[in-house]
Image (cartoon, rainbow, N blue to C red; front, side, top):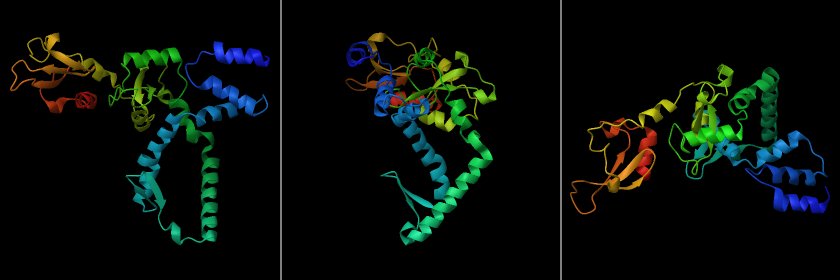
Length: 264
């Protein structure tokens, strides 16, 4: 392709569903027109904020927690920054020696485990086609099927309910939508199917005054809850926030229902 053809493709013909095409072409031009597949993968990874968010959670809930427990690091909850305990008292030579020990620890672990140390990411985060991902997220109404948060607030991932390394398939019946936080905590050791809760959300009782509501009384709603005018108001504009699912009390609501009520 010459310049005019490339300019026409980028300006008029490039159809994007993600950042991948421009990022790949920029990387090719950066390296003289030729670059390895691995390097392009690294470039795409550098632009993937969801991966940064994933490893921030790993830092907070896993490695950071362990090191805090042993008094090796401290964490400022407001700024979300970590400090190495006693660092100001270390000499340059001591820092050099400690880094050498850490490098030796890394080499020893990598020699013992090889690439298997990342198997949970390869299997749990394996490629799912855009079409299938769309169907799973649409079926979940754009919300995490565990915590209920919207795709507009947190990136949603397609999770294998029964993980691949436990024999799980790519069939839609084995897939569910989880936000990156819930998926990171679930990892590949759990095969809980949170979609059963979605079926409960449709449960209604025919004689319940909150299940059988005149649409004219509804003034705002979400998939799991709605805002209604009270049929017997205590004062003007008395308003109620109720879940769509029939439950006996507030304490029987699931986390996603509570989130919906709180948002409303």
